[in-house]
Amino acid sequence: MRGDGDGGAVAARRPFWRLDPDQEWRRNLYIVMVAVFASFTGFTFVMPFLPLYIQELGVTDPGDAALWSGFLFGVSPLLSGLLAPLWAILAERHGRKAMMQRALGVFIFVIAGMAFATNVYQLLALRVLLGVFGGFGVMAVALASTLAPREQVGEAVGLLQATQLASGIGAPLLGGVVVDAVGLERSFFVASALCLAGFLLITFAYREDREERGGAKAGPARGALRQYLRLPIFVGLLVAIFTIQFIDRSFGPLLPLYIATLDAPAGRIGSITGAVMTLGAVAGTFAAAYVGRLSSRLAPRPLLLWSLGAGALCCLPIAFVGHWWELLALRVLLGLLAGGALTLAYAVGGRALPEGARMGAFGVLAGLGQIGGAVSPMITGLLARWASLGAIFVVDAALYLLILAWSWRTLAPGPRERAARAPDGALPAEHD
Image (cartoon, rainbow, N blue to C red; front, side):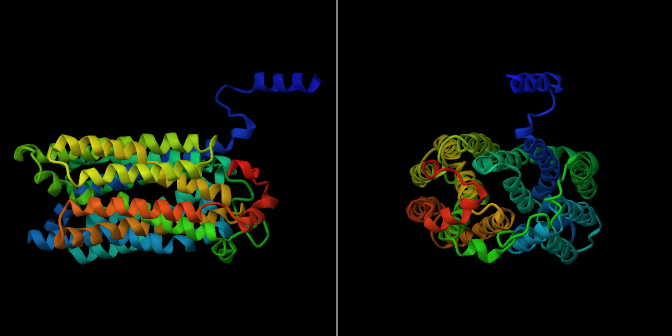
């Protein structure tokens, strides 16, 4: 009774803004989320105007400008995805906060440097630097996976992914206002300032304990790539996350062209495309946050299988729509039912992978997912050229079914996974 009384007194004295000690991990997560929102908003709102900037740098032919735009858009996420495992391993050795600061610091200087580019080759060099030394988005996902308890990894990653998606919803509108107000070149300084705000937030508000600074936890699981590469479920997650990201980024760049083949009025194609993309992103944001929270109470693997099946059912009809409003409805439905698939895949990994290897494991998973998103527009662009625009959605539906079968076979923890995570206080088998 005394213990209960003392606990109640302590709780009564705790300020309302202080979290329960068991929930202190949420404070750091919220700090990371705000930093991600600020930096991603800055980074995202200048990207839609990159083709215009390329033309200002001397590439006047529309076809050449489009080719350069596609290459410049894809090179940074592709390189950062390839190098994600390296940065995750270094974060475990030298501190997670330091690696976040490093990535944001690169954003600040490289994005500001884009304002001083005098030709497209200098812009390419800066985008390469951003990919090689940045990787903030991948690092944020990996960090979120280590902050939360095992059964709440899906919730933490879902909130972070919802933040990333939310930053992209209003960023193009904000970017248009900024570009009109200060000009295209100066808008890079505004984007850099937003990244600086994220850097300062991580520097002064993020609380790093001794373990996070590196070297506190010994053992083969910490940073040992071979530890989790031997787990069949990890290989299953690699393929699943790559494919989910590939599908998610496959049709976005081609939506205006597809809408133009429907009954959309010629003068409203831009606004209809914006509505389809925005409402789809809003639906995906809601789904990521909701299923992330749901995965902390329910087993994430069955939810993932249902989400993948729903994705196939929503994608296939899009290939045969005849009206733009049908496309809009199906895109929103796809976002609601399948938009949380990536979050659920991470939730499966959070419960099944060894505790000490989580930072490195999620760095590899997020990196490969980013590579899938980077190569997707290029591959689907070739498909649209040689087949048809509607064929993309048929292929996406087939990929959803294939990854559904793959996940059903590979993402159930086997004896090796249970043995690998048993020392870390794994959940009982019935929770899997």
